[in-house]
Amino acid sequence: MRAAVLGSPVAHSLSPVLHSAAYAALGLDGWHYDAHECDETGLARFVDGLGPEWAGLSLTMPLKRVALDVARDVSPLAAAVGAANTLVLTEGRRYADNTDVAGIVHAVRGAPPAGRAVVLGAGGTAQAALAALRELAIGDVTVLVRSTARTGELRATADRLGVAPEITDGLLDPARARAALADADVVVSTLPRGAADGLDGVRPGAVVLDVVYAPWPTAFAAAAEAAGAHVVSGLEMLLHQAVAQVELMTDRTPPIEAMREALDAAVAARA
Image (cartoon, rainbow, N blue to C red):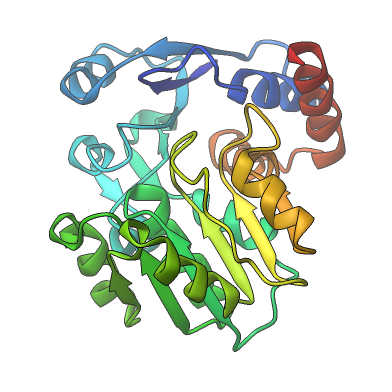
């Protein structure tokens, strides 16, 4: 059986490390997982060319939204989020799901329920963050973006989820961003590498997830940790979303510690 991660760029992905470690721990000797460069225009063609030996695909940027277009069935969660990072292909299926939500939930599980949250960014991972925060019973959410004119997908996700975040172009105003961060119990940065550099104001004790994990720590994560926040790297989210993906593709529960050990070793080797 085969599986792979698709995206552009994708060479840096640690998903092959995680999935391969899971296969080894589960004794799935005939399973193989690799990486393929693929953009939005090429996803449908790639999927159409796959044979019955394919169990599934992990999808990273920029494929999370277009994944819904190539699927035949979509989980209620992925439909509500409006993005999928997983395509299950076993037994001829094209089933789209979103395990990013589970990854975020596990990464920020120390956040207090009924607290206040700030999400940075408006892409597919920000959409998943809204679903994760809903699952954690955190309803007071502010989303900071650069342009509110480009938040149509995010607003549609909020409507489908039944949540009402405040969406503001606060990333353009450091003072407004600092004020929002200072009032947050949990912060989820979904911004690409370098985009959150210079942001500060996170309060002591806040839970901060920065989905960027290379290089680590990011400037934003370092500033938050220096301020006394509990900082979590994107590796924790990556690990837990991969655990859920392996289970979807193999119908078996992988040993998380074996995957964590392989991930830690791979990160250390790249340092």
